Image 1: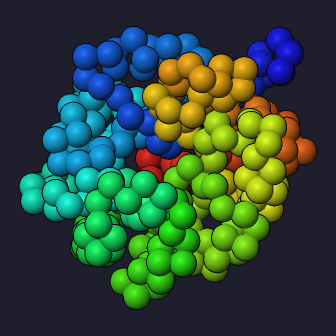
Image 2 (image 1 turned 120 degrees about the vertical axis):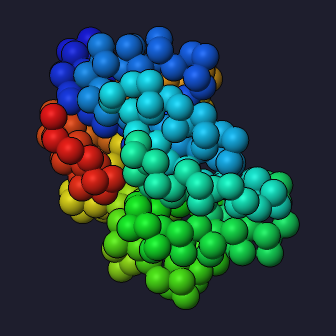
Length: 260
Protein backbone atom coordinates (compact mmCIF):
# COMPACT_ATOMS: atom_id res chain seq x y z
CA UNK A 1 0.00 0.00 0.00
CA UNK A 2 1.48 3.33 -1.04
CA UNK A 3 1.89 6.46 1.05
CA UNK A 4 -1.04 8.21 -0.66
CA UNK A 5 -3.38 5.33 0.12
CA UNK A 6 -2.21 5.26 3.71
CA UNK A 7 -2.75 8.99 4.05
CA UNK A 8 -6.28 8.82 2.66
CA UNK A 9 -7.11 5.82 4.83
CA UNK A 10 -5.86 7.58 7.94
CA UNK A 11 -8.25 10.49 7.44
CA UNK A 12 -11.11 8.57 9.09
CA UNK A 13 -12.84 8.77 11.40
CA UNK A 14 -12.82 5.03 12.01
CA UNK A 15 -14.26 2.81 14.74
CA UNK A 16 -12.46 -0.35 15.82
CA UNK A 17 -15.36 -2.62 16.71
CA UNK A 18 -13.21 -5.35 18.26
CA UNK A 19 -9.91 -5.10 20.10
CA UNK A 20 -8.37 -6.55 23.25
CA UNK A 21 -6.75 -3.95 25.50
CA UNK A 22 -4.74 -4.39 28.68
CA UNK A 23 -5.09 -1.82 31.45
CA UNK A 24 -1.33 -1.41 31.83
CA UNK A 25 -0.75 -0.59 28.14
CA UNK A 26 -4.04 0.94 27.02
CA UNK A 27 -3.03 4.60 27.45
CA UNK A 28 -0.47 4.47 24.67
CA UNK A 29 -2.63 2.33 22.40
CA UNK A 30 -5.65 4.59 22.71
CA UNK A 31 -3.51 7.68 22.12
CA UNK A 32 -1.96 6.12 19.01
CA UNK A 33 -5.41 5.13 17.73
CA UNK A 34 -6.69 8.65 18.28
CA UNK A 35 -3.76 10.04 16.28
CA UNK A 36 -4.56 7.56 13.47
CA UNK A 37 -8.12 8.85 13.15
CA UNK A 38 -9.88 6.24 15.29
CA UNK A 39 -12.85 7.87 16.98
CA UNK A 40 -14.02 4.97 19.13
CA UNK A 41 -12.98 1.48 20.19
CA UNK A 42 -14.85 -1.51 21.59
CA UNK A 43 -12.71 -3.33 24.18
CA UNK A 44 -13.69 -6.99 24.25
CA UNK A 45 -13.74 -9.36 27.21
CA UNK A 46 -13.03 -13.07 26.85
CA UNK A 47 -13.91 -14.25 30.36
CA UNK A 48 -15.26 -12.60 33.50
CA UNK A 49 -11.89 -11.34 34.77
CA UNK A 50 -10.89 -10.08 31.32
CA UNK A 51 -14.30 -8.45 30.95
CA UNK A 52 -13.73 -6.53 34.20
CA UNK A 53 -10.48 -5.27 32.68
CA UNK A 54 -12.30 -4.17 29.51
CA UNK A 55 -14.75 -2.22 31.67
CA UNK A 56 -11.83 -0.62 33.53
CA UNK A 57 -10.20 0.42 30.25
CA UNK A 58 -13.49 1.93 29.08
CA UNK A 59 -13.82 3.83 32.33
CA UNK A 60 -10.38 5.29 31.80
CA UNK A 61 -10.85 6.49 28.20
CA UNK A 62 -13.80 8.40 26.76
CA UNK A 63 -13.30 6.79 23.33
CA UNK A 64 -13.61 3.24 24.64
CA UNK A 65 -16.69 1.14 25.34
CA UNK A 66 -16.68 -2.43 26.67
CA UNK A 67 -18.15 -5.75 25.61
CA UNK A 68 -18.29 -8.35 28.37
CA UNK A 69 -18.48 -12.04 27.67
CA UNK A 70 -17.06 -15.54 27.77
CA UNK A 71 -15.15 -16.72 24.70
CA UNK A 72 -15.75 -20.31 23.58
CA UNK A 73 -12.18 -21.16 24.62
CA UNK A 74 -13.18 -20.27 28.21
CA UNK A 75 -16.68 -21.76 28.13
CA UNK A 76 -15.85 -24.60 30.53
CA UNK A 77 -15.41 -21.93 33.23
CA UNK A 78 -19.04 -20.80 32.88
CA UNK A 79 -20.49 -17.30 33.15
CA UNK A 80 -20.71 -16.77 36.92
CA UNK A 81 -20.23 -13.07 37.64
CA UNK A 82 -20.85 -11.90 34.10
CA UNK A 83 -24.36 -10.62 34.78
CA UNK A 84 -22.97 -8.23 37.42
CA UNK A 85 -21.11 -6.35 34.67
CA UNK A 86 -24.01 -5.93 32.26
CA UNK A 87 -25.59 -2.89 33.85
CA UNK A 88 -22.43 -0.80 33.97
CA UNK A 89 -22.57 2.41 31.95
CA UNK A 90 -19.66 1.75 29.59
CA UNK A 91 -20.88 -1.75 28.63
CA UNK A 92 -22.49 -1.82 25.19
CA UNK A 93 -22.36 -5.50 24.24
CA UNK A 94 -22.30 -9.14 25.33
CA UNK A 95 -19.39 -11.19 24.02
CA UNK A 96 -17.29 -12.25 22.48
CA UNK A 97 -19.13 -15.51 22.71
CA UNK A 98 -19.85 -18.33 20.32
CA UNK A 99 -18.28 -21.53 19.07
CA UNK A 100 -14.72 -22.52 18.14
CA UNK A 101 -14.48 -26.05 16.82
CA UNK A 102 -11.03 -25.43 15.34
CA UNK A 103 -9.24 -25.49 18.70
CA UNK A 104 -11.92 -27.03 20.98
CA UNK A 105 -10.26 -25.62 24.10
CA UNK A 106 -13.59 -26.17 25.87
CA UNK A 107 -15.86 -29.18 25.29
CA UNK A 108 -18.40 -28.51 22.57
CA UNK A 109 -21.44 -29.05 24.82
CA UNK A 110 -20.05 -26.37 27.17
CA UNK A 111 -19.46 -24.03 24.24
CA UNK A 112 -23.01 -24.44 23.01
CA UNK A 113 -24.53 -24.00 26.48
CA UNK A 114 -22.52 -20.86 27.30
CA UNK A 115 -23.19 -19.37 23.87
CA UNK A 116 -26.93 -19.87 24.28
CA UNK A 117 -26.81 -18.36 27.76
CA UNK A 118 -25.11 -15.21 26.47
CA UNK A 119 -27.62 -14.85 23.65
CA UNK A 120 -30.23 -14.86 26.40
CA UNK A 121 -28.35 -12.11 28.26
CA UNK A 122 -28.26 -9.99 25.12
CA UNK A 123 -32.02 -10.37 24.79
CA UNK A 124 -32.61 -9.54 28.47
CA UNK A 125 -30.43 -6.42 28.44
CA UNK A 126 -30.98 -5.17 24.88
CA UNK A 127 -27.22 -5.09 24.40
CA UNK A 128 -25.45 -5.97 21.16
CA UNK A 129 -24.27 -9.59 20.76
CA UNK A 130 -20.68 -10.14 19.56
CA UNK A 131 -20.21 -13.60 18.05
CA UNK A 132 -17.05 -15.63 17.45
CA UNK A 133 -17.48 -18.55 15.05
CA UNK A 134 -14.67 -20.72 13.76
CA UNK A 135 -15.19 -24.04 11.98
CA UNK A 136 -18.69 -24.06 13.48
CA UNK A 137 -21.01 -22.21 11.12
CA UNK A 138 -23.86 -24.73 11.12
CA UNK A 139 -24.10 -24.90 14.90
CA UNK A 140 -23.59 -21.14 15.24
CA UNK A 141 -26.55 -20.35 13.00
CA UNK A 142 -28.63 -23.17 14.52
CA UNK A 143 -28.18 -21.84 18.06
CA UNK A 144 -28.87 -18.27 16.97
CA UNK A 145 -32.05 -19.47 15.30
CA UNK A 146 -33.22 -21.51 18.29
CA UNK A 147 -32.46 -18.78 20.86
CA UNK A 148 -33.56 -15.89 18.63
CA UNK A 149 -31.11 -13.51 16.97
CA UNK A 150 -30.73 -10.30 19.02
CA UNK A 151 -31.71 -7.16 17.15
CA UNK A 152 -28.06 -6.06 17.00
CA UNK A 153 -25.73 -8.98 16.34
CA UNK A 154 -22.14 -8.77 15.07
CA UNK A 155 -20.23 -11.68 13.54
CA UNK A 156 -16.72 -10.58 14.41
CA UNK A 157 -13.59 -11.40 12.39
CA UNK A 158 -15.77 -12.79 9.63
CA UNK A 159 -13.98 -15.63 7.83
CA UNK A 160 -16.85 -17.32 6.03
CA UNK A 161 -17.49 -17.29 2.33
CA UNK A 162 -20.43 -16.08 0.28
CA UNK A 163 -22.79 -18.85 1.53
CA UNK A 164 -22.12 -17.76 5.12
CA UNK A 165 -22.65 -14.13 4.14
CA UNK A 166 -26.10 -15.06 2.86
CA UNK A 167 -26.95 -16.89 6.08
CA UNK A 168 -25.67 -13.97 8.18
CA UNK A 169 -27.73 -11.48 6.20
CA UNK A 170 -30.82 -13.65 6.54
CA UNK A 171 -30.24 -13.56 10.31
CA UNK A 172 -29.91 -9.76 10.21
CA UNK A 173 -26.32 -9.69 11.46
CA UNK A 174 -23.50 -7.25 10.85
CA UNK A 175 -20.23 -8.62 9.41
CA UNK A 176 -16.98 -7.30 10.86
CA UNK A 177 -13.79 -7.74 8.84
CA UNK A 178 -10.31 -7.90 10.35
CA UNK A 179 -6.78 -7.71 8.95
CA UNK A 180 -7.36 -11.09 7.27
CA UNK A 181 -9.04 -9.14 4.47
CA UNK A 182 -5.59 -7.74 3.60
CA UNK A 183 -4.00 -11.20 3.20
CA UNK A 184 -3.45 -11.94 -0.51
CA UNK A 185 -4.48 -15.61 -0.25
CA UNK A 186 -7.68 -15.00 1.76
CA UNK A 187 -9.83 -15.19 -1.38
CA UNK A 188 -12.94 -16.48 0.37
CA UNK A 189 -12.84 -13.53 2.78
CA UNK A 190 -12.30 -11.14 -0.15
CA UNK A 191 -15.41 -12.53 -1.84
CA UNK A 192 -17.40 -12.25 1.37
CA UNK A 193 -16.30 -8.65 1.88
CA UNK A 194 -17.27 -7.76 -1.67
CA UNK A 195 -20.68 -9.40 -1.23
CA UNK A 196 -21.53 -7.78 2.10
CA UNK A 197 -24.03 -4.92 1.69
CA UNK A 198 -22.76 -1.53 2.77
CA UNK A 199 -25.26 -1.24 5.61
CA UNK A 200 -24.02 -4.49 7.23
CA UNK A 201 -20.28 -3.74 7.03
CA UNK A 202 -17.94 -3.22 10.00
CA UNK A 203 -14.17 -3.09 10.47
CA UNK A 204 -11.98 -4.25 13.36
CA UNK A 205 -8.40 -5.05 14.30
CA UNK A 206 -8.86 -7.92 16.80
CA UNK A 207 -5.67 -6.47 18.29
CA UNK A 208 -3.19 -7.69 19.38
CA UNK A 209 -3.83 -10.44 16.79
CA UNK A 210 -4.10 -10.40 12.99
CA UNK A 211 -2.03 -7.36 12.06
CA UNK A 212 -2.81 -6.35 8.47
CA UNK A 213 -0.39 -6.26 5.56
CA UNK A 214 2.24 -4.71 5.57
CA UNK A 215 2.53 -5.34 9.33
CA UNK A 216 1.57 -9.02 9.25
CA UNK A 217 3.35 -11.06 11.89
CA UNK A 218 3.79 -8.13 14.28
CA UNK A 219 1.63 -7.30 17.31
CA UNK A 220 -1.51 -5.56 16.14
CA UNK A 221 -2.95 -2.30 17.48
CA UNK A 222 -6.21 -0.33 17.14
CA UNK A 223 -4.16 2.33 15.36
CA UNK A 224 -4.08 -0.08 12.40
CA UNK A 225 -7.82 0.20 11.69
CA UNK A 226 -7.10 2.50 8.71
CA UNK A 227 -4.93 -0.20 7.13
CA UNK A 228 -7.67 -2.80 7.55
CA UNK A 229 -10.22 -0.35 6.17
CA UNK A 230 -8.08 0.46 3.15
CA UNK A 231 -7.69 -3.26 2.38
CA UNK A 232 -11.45 -3.73 2.77
CA UNK A 233 -12.03 -0.81 0.40
CA UNK A 234 -9.67 -2.31 -2.17
CA UNK A 235 -11.46 -5.68 -2.35
CA UNK A 236 -14.84 -3.92 -2.58
CA UNK A 237 -13.77 -1.38 -5.19
CA UNK A 238 -14.58 1.50 -2.85
CA UNK A 239 -12.53 4.41 -1.58
CA UNK A 240 -11.08 4.25 1.96
CA UNK A 241 -12.97 7.45 2.77
CA UNK A 242 -16.28 5.84 1.78
CA UNK A 243 -15.53 2.71 3.81
CA UNK A 244 -14.58 4.85 6.81
CA UNK A 245 -17.86 6.76 6.61
CA UNK A 246 -19.96 3.62 6.06
CA UNK A 247 -18.38 1.48 8.76
CA UNK A 248 -18.34 4.30 11.32
CA UNK A 249 -22.05 4.99 10.81
CA UNK A 250 -22.80 1.26 11.00
CA UNK A 251 -20.73 0.82 14.17
CA UNK A 252 -22.62 3.61 15.90
CA UNK A 253 -25.89 1.86 15.07
CA UNK A 254 -24.63 -1.64 15.84
CA UNK A 255 -23.32 -0.69 19.30
CA UNK A 256 -25.67 2.17 20.14
CA UNK A 257 -22.85 4.71 20.24
CA UNK A 258 -23.57 8.41 20.34
CA UNK A 259 -22.24 10.53 17.48
CA UNK A 260 -19.50 12.97 18.52
